[in-house]
Image 1: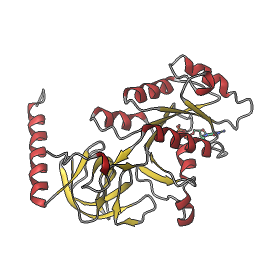
Image 2 (image 1 turned 120 degrees about the vertical axis):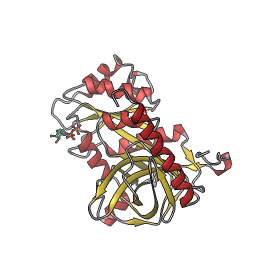
Image 3 (image 1 turned 45 degrees about the vertical axis):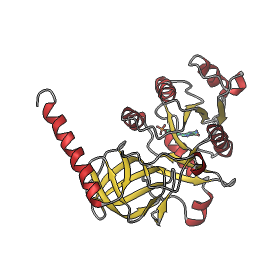
Length: 297
Ligand code: GDP
């Protein structure tokens, strides 16, 4: 099938976690994503992460790597999950200390639980005078989130995205959680993974941002994503730099597809162009049939 060979345990190597940040509007998701970008030791040298491609990977001082989905909002997460594309390993739920648990906080907790992804609580805006994180932690108890300070096993970290405090503690908490999950993938096989964003770029043509889940994606590979295929002409990272290849959980912009796939589409690398054509023609036919048999068509 399209899944390719299954991997033997011996082929599996540790891989970085994929992390999504969720929470109520204005609680600081975007600010926290921006602050976390700056924990990247590589970006510090190369001038930082400059492009928004839908995801970025940071390398911490410890050498650990973390991939963040840079698509705040629950809609993208739900859309991917609805399609069975479970790309997220860990969910950070951001709660603003002055606002506390709000409807979208509860929604975020539900999403994470439904996806079976462990939660880390980031109590944000702790720079505010009168900030009382304990109040937030108590509120969370009513939503089945029992943090360590309350005798449970959910990690909660006080942060300020604005003042950039608590970020080392937060990334450490992620690394610790990732270790517990024993995340592994075989890097030595044809790549597969998920499309997280795509667009039609005026100059570059169709551009899809993918996250590799297994294997290593290479320039020149023949890639099928949803109803689209193409020979990978270039792989570009979040710094706008060309990469020769992208291993497990490395986000990459893929150039060379014949059209823009949809977010949440799985992608696979196949042996040859004939196979790619066969698969995409079949998929496009299926989509047409589905549309033709839809009510009202
Ligand atoms: P989002 O809607 O969850 O993405 O929230 P934003 O990141 O856009 O932040 C909403 C507002 O809260 C903005 O005005 C931010 O400047 C502010 N904000 C975010 N983080 C902090 C923080 O740590 N401390 C303070 N005082 N304000 C913050």
